[in-house]
Structures are given as C-alpha cells and as structure tokens.
View (tube, rainbow, N blue to C red):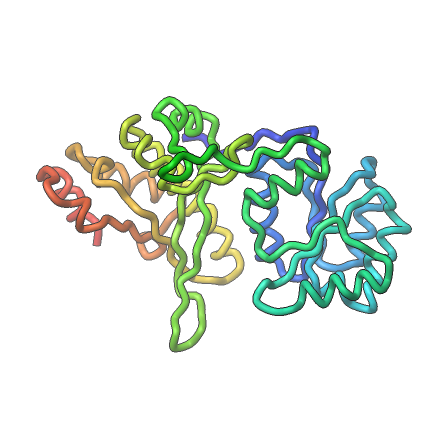
Length: 298
C-alpha cells in the first residue's frame, strides 16, 4: 500500500507552528497535513518564527503558538508579529486543565492584542479544520448529520472511497506506567479525517469496513502509520512499542500470519516494537486458520 500523500487545499492559509517542544510541533503538523493544510512551517522560538515570516511570500499566515511563548515578556511575540506580519492571525494553544487560557485572554485584552483564536492543547482534527476554514472564509461543515441514534454511519461505498483516498489515519494514545509516570508504549487509534465531514470515530466506519471487506487495507494502513511513529521515536532515543487492533479477518487464510509478520518487518518494525491486539470476543467461532496464524507470533 503506498504511503499517504494528503492532498493540500490551496484555499487554506499557510500555517506556522511555534512551540519549544518538538513532539507537539510534529504531532500538530501531521494532523494539519492530514486535513489538507499546506505551506506548513515550524519554529521552536519566537525569534525563529519571526525570521520565517520575514521571507514568506504569502501574508495570510495562521500562526499557531504555544501559550508559553505567546505570553512571555508581556506578549512581546504578539506585538512583534503585528508589526512584522500584520495580515497574520495568531492562534494560542494552552492546557485546558488550568486557567492558563483565561489568564492569557485577560492579559491580551489589557494589551489590545486579541488573538484570532485561543484553543485547548492538543486541538482535534475537527477543531483544526474548522479553524482553517474560518481563516479562509469558507463555509464550515462540522460533522456528519445526526440521526435519532447518533452520528450517521458511513456506507460501504463511502468507506471504500475513504480508504482509496487515504483519509484513514492513526492517532497515538500513550500508555503511562502509574508507578513512574513514564510513557512505556502507545496505541494506534484509527480515525478517518474526511475533508468535508471532519474527524470520524470508529463507530461511524468500522461496520462499513466489515461490509466492504476492508480490514486488510485498514491493517496495512495502520501498520504504516505505526512504523512511521516507531521510527520517529527511535530517532529521538525512545524505545517504545506500539499496539494496533487486528481483526481475525486478516488471518483467515493459511499463511496470513507469515505475510503479516513479513510486511511489518519490511516497514522496519522489530518484533519488540509491535503489539497486535485481538479481542477474545472477536475469536469466538473463528476457523482453525486464524488460530494457526496467531501462533506464529510470540
């Protein structure tokens, strides 16, 4: 399966991410790229951000800045941004669990420096998409229409188009050791980032994937995203494993286990870096080939 190459939407403004920490910068950049944002740049300091804007051709930048940088030195960055790039819009990102955002909004008001948006960190793909559309002046469609039973679920035809267009992505949820507070592994969570419908949850598309026999495509995509994350963590010196959910349908034919292990290896995943999770409920009534394929994994 080819690597994802998201389609950039030229109507969306370019985005500059300003954060002193590399992991949140990279994570935000991936989500923005997945929802069609182009012209993405990043900076670790206020000075680097201002330097990046100085040589830019476009003026309508959306500058997404961590609150620690945005608030330092009595909002010096916001003032400098207004002089260096008057058409740029400042978006401030901070933690929701404290009064950081409220305190920043009050400080901004006293300085007559109202940001374009103040958002909880990390923002969801749907929130980012709505922000980009608002910045571009486009009409915002926030989600699938509701039904009496909740959000509408995708049809097999719709989910097939999503898979074909490579709108399926992995979000990574860390697993923390309570005794030490350290991250010991992470879990890949499947999401569809639809350019019109926004972020879709598994309950909205897994049934359609069953009907469309798309579990093998889903698994291949999740393995690719998992391998990319593991390579990034490995480069940063973090020896963490990543787990993905696996449907027994992917192991229903003789030799499927060997093929799956070979594919994971070809992506650069080592055995200790990948955990395949199959629920006990999913194994009820499966054929002998599924059990045989599972036995090849340690």
